[in-house]
Each structure stands twice: as structure tokens, then as C-alpha cells.
Image (cartoon, rainbow, N blue to C red):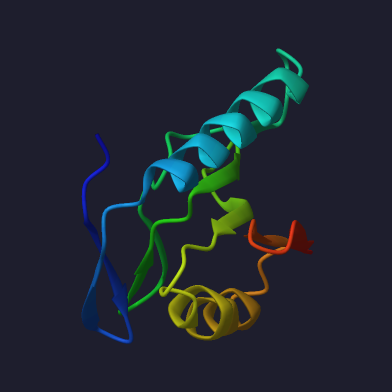
Amino acid sequence: MPQAYEELISGEPHLRPAPAAPHELLCNRLHAWVRAALPLNSALCLPPRRTPFALCTGDRVCPDLALTHADDGRLYLAVEVLQPGDHHCDTVVKKELYLEQLLPRLWIVDSRYHNVEV
């Protein structure tokens, strides 16, 4: 059963609600798909869902799916799966943080509209 989790945005804690069952089903499928696509000798690693990443001082995010560089753990891809009623943090606030940190890849998945923003 998923639990609520905390992210740190500009030094302020943000308690995120426990993800709903449809959200977790989609995350399970994404993780399985990405895991199957990574070769054994990949330069990228797939950490567990919602692993915390410090983007800079005062910012710690927990993407639903992440790929990191195997050599140094730097974030390469963050995937945010939107939940009904909890879009603002992922689509505005965290998107801006990722852009400021020059994250190479960001996917925002909105299952309501069968849409992925890359």
C-alpha cells in the first residue's frame, strides 16, 4: 500500500498524498517497461519509485520514476505521473525546478487525457 511522502521545495516541506491505486498501476507498468528496455550493461540505473533526489540546496523531489547515471547517480530522466487534484506541484513547481537544473529528460504523464509531455 503506497504511503504519503514529503518533498522539499525551496526549503519548504510539501506533504504529498498517498498515490491512488490507478496511479500505482500506471507506475508499475512504466517501471516494468523501462526495466525491460534497459540492457544489462546500461550506463543508466532504475532506482526504486519515488527515490528522493536533491536537485540543489533546499530542493528534494521524489519522481514516480527516475533514471540515473550509473557512474555518479546524477538524475537523467524524471517521470511525474499526475494524480487528480494534485497537478500544480508536478506541472508547474517541479517542472520549473527540473528546468533550472537542466535535467536532460522530463516526462509528465497525464492518464486522464492519455497524454505524455516530454
